[in-house]
Length: 145
Image 1 (cartoon, rainbow, N blue to C red):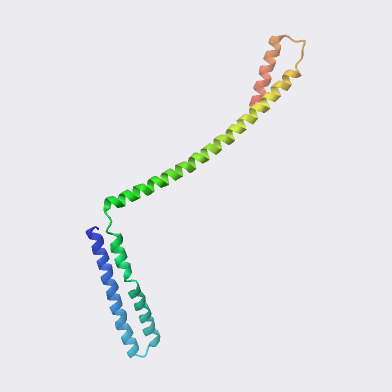
Image 2 (tube, one colour):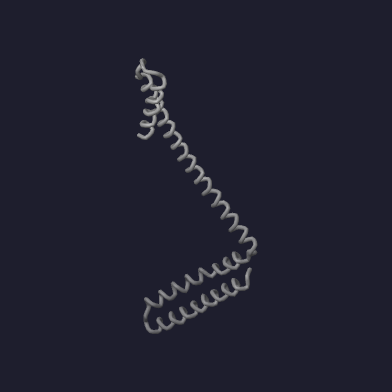
């Protein structure tokens, strides 16, 4: 445990005890002045403060950890978070890539169907060179669609 932590916990505990003392005095004064409502509220708060005394032992137990152990725990947590987020991001990227791949495949199928239908409806009497140039023009036009 670091010296500052121990000092902080002891200071908080001292303030806690002082608050209990002040509440006790206020409660006594209120009962002498016949202010029963305020007196009972003071006693209730004082009882709550007594119930929370165990908090200081818990704080002291929790703060006894070695700093290197705490840093190790933080590093472990950070690496787990990074690993989880990277898995989620990889899953999202894979899903988007699959969707884009399907879209591209569908577009190529449509293009193939158009080219094949254009070839099937082409004129038979024309020369091969003229047919090829027309086919290239049609493919270029279809690809720009």
